[in-house]
Image (cartoon, rainbow, N blue to C red; front, side):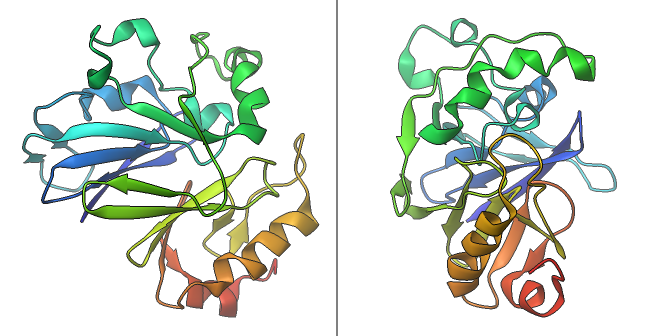
Amino acid sequence: MIIKTFIEPPIDNNNYVLIDEETKEGALIDCSSPAIWNKVPYTRGKVSVSTVGENREEIENVTLKYILLTHGHFDHIAGIKSKNSYLPDSTERPQIYMHKDDLNWVQEVNTFMPMMGMPEMDIPQIDVFVEDRDVIKLGNIEIRVIHTPGHTQGGVCYYTNGVLFSGDTIFREAVGRCDLQGGNFEQIVDSIENKLYKLPDDTIIYPGHGKQTTIGWEKEHNLFL
């Protein structure tokens, strides 16, 4: 299993590419900027990884199979390409997964894009609506969906092989803001304490913003909970 991190504007979002080494199938977790497509091609070819302070490296012949959205806020979906940007063969277009309760955020994305000085985008087509405990197969990797409402009503985390992609549900020593439409602080606390904290303490958390952490560290140091 390979995980690559891409930090992209407009708010320094963490975007992750999860790759199954055996089958070379990949999933992009969140998609915050169109610039990411210069680094992660959507069809077979080389995935080039170039990050400040790191050497450039390439992963050969990766097929990007999914875009897995943790929630519908504009800064996590602004890089999704329009359907017409892909080749006519639908197998060339990664399938977009999201929880249905955040569809309203996707449909209203162009309300927020101009506020950040970004051009309006085509409303993305969501292919699959995930539910709590769904399992997504990526080659030989099984990714479990954990529905974690609180930051938004349709917020989810993706868990696999001791790794949690948490979106904006939990950060290092912080939690996602709950003052936007659909946010609920009591709900996010419940999601974390009764779902995420059931995972092993050594689970590595890859958040939507900021540095990595672990479940064990957050149990000891996250003062919001």
